[in-house]
Image 1 (cartoon, rainbow, N blue to C red):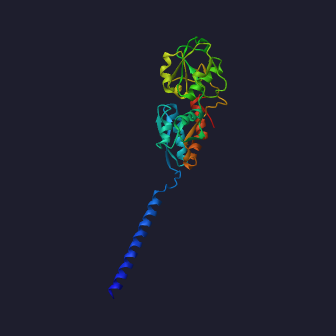
Image 2 (image 1 turned 180 degrees about the horizontal axis):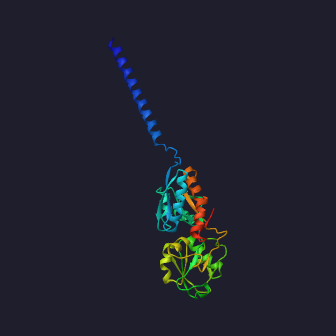
Length: 285
């Protein structure tokens, strides 16, 4: 072959090599782009899940729920917390699959404050909040200027104020609904002094107060009987503070979480609530 022919062949091979290299580079880029694209995430059903609950009486309830879930092929591990501030944070971070401790006004306040992506998926119980005292035995003995403890979170604090207003002890500004604050106390004829404390601490502070409005679970944990010891309490019917199982919004259609709700809302759990708490804690479903 002539020198010109050899040169032409070399140029052709060089061009083909460059094209092959460019094609390989282009293919690699397409692959990398494909890998960089987020893949759709789908809620994954599980055979074992973690549920956040509050320590105390609720642990007894969840032993029954766990047994009922096991009959349906679902294993529940309860993760026990000591106050209301932790379970939603753990759920949002994915450390647990669900929690069960709160009512809707509380969750709404937490979402507004912290931006949680959490929703209710099934009702559990209603625990009427009440006013307790270590110093007096009846409401008519509550003195003017009494020191009253109320929860310091917006929803349960508002719940406490609504309880006092419902019994004519204070008057609230109109239109405040379920979440009034101390700033909304329009009339305080008995000149009560209010102390806002963490809900879990109110039973410990009770000896130093004339009275405190305490959530039922904490009252029970402290040995108080809501049916006998509460000076006043919320209505047990048409109560807007029903508790529920909550989950991340992205997980709402998971079959295992539906099984969890079914296990809680079972006849066996309802019977246990009636037998164990005798009306102090009621089914909300």
